[in-house]
Image 1 (cartoon, helix red, strand yellow):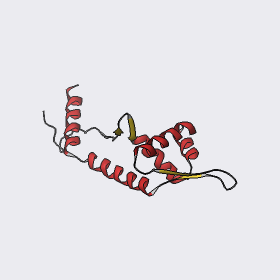
Image 2 (cartoon, helix red, strand yellow):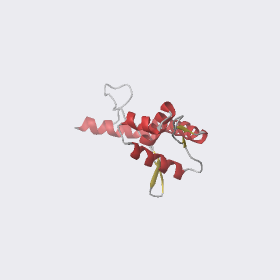
Image 3 (cartoon, one colour):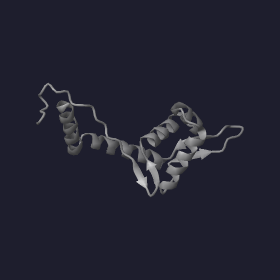
Image 4 (tube, one colour):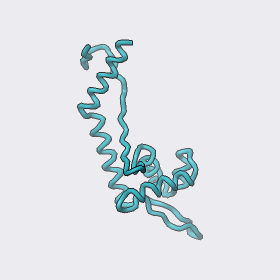
Length: 127
């Protein structure tokens, strides 16, 4: 059964997510991208962690993994103290975020994703 775009069948909203793995480590994925964006927005790993509902330690471990997986750190930190510390997304980190979002956008409109949506829609129709 083929479902055309003009039929009354409402196609499901299917979103593909990208996860990049380097050896055993997940170098980048949806959660790490969100963490990077929040670090960029807040200037702080701890503030980003709070916004995501995770511990500072967990966020720090994710940042360490990302920094270890890439040739240059994605997150740069400054020591705390009288003026306070902080963190920011490096130039490489900003490039990685931009490329990740471009790749995700291309994936969403790819022919393969559209074919999968059709197959999911066919499965819904046969129920």
